[in-house]
Length: 358
Image 1 (cartoon, rainbow, N blue to C red):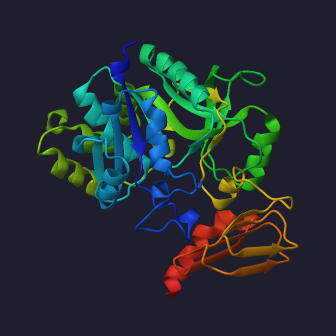
Image 2: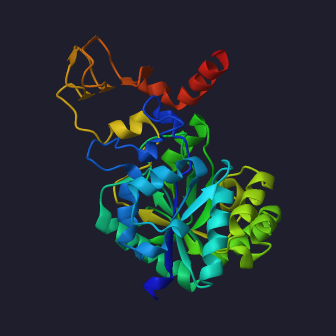
């Protein structure tokens, strides 16, 4: 298998509203150093994928408003490696665009599709598991997703039921029996107890021709909009062609469009210490804590009789916090969030209500 046939698509167009107030429309979380290590999430994702595919084969799909942010944070990219969406239409159109463009360059392309805002701590294990998945996808007409063993009945993830009895070994591949997108709490608890469900990491591996074939079968309208004329890609006409496709296409995730319908889906068990960093609570799991289980950022923040809290305040803010338990307290640019960690999945709902009120 030639490494030159391996490509990566980084999806970087989201707003990351569940990381409000730090993540906002003009500066979403993928462009933030949320870990405080001097690198943003998109920079970490790019560096990770450079270990698996040639630098020139990495493509970023992002909203056109974020092009300058991408160029600033990833200066090694050439202009043709930044694909722009005129409007947000979820992941299926984004993947259709990238797959069509790359297929027009290389008919034998293997694609790794990854979100820009995930945390992966064990890079060597990531590389090994990705290469296992690429080997499978390059030889067979298979759609692969990386599965994570669930630790709680989380309703924010898709769930993958696999065929094998008992747990898979890390890096082992199993056919998928069923794919369920974001179940309710009751179903998530059933999935967790059953032992034969993994979380869908949102990281996919397939040949370009395989995913385009699936799109043509399950979403022919979407396929026609992006694949009616492959010769238009990588020419001056691409921009207008793609903009027209985005304006006309439906907004739908790749999970609903393909994963829940396709029969040729495999899951690979991944054990590389993964988090989608979808919420403050998921970030909290990876932060250093004091003896009371608090993660505190802010040089002038003083905390008393408080437990298991995530507190992120500006250094210049003098704050005294007392008597909190299991709370998220974040301030950024004159925006303040105080939220029970157990209720963080509703942050989007609260933001929507505030937006309507104001």
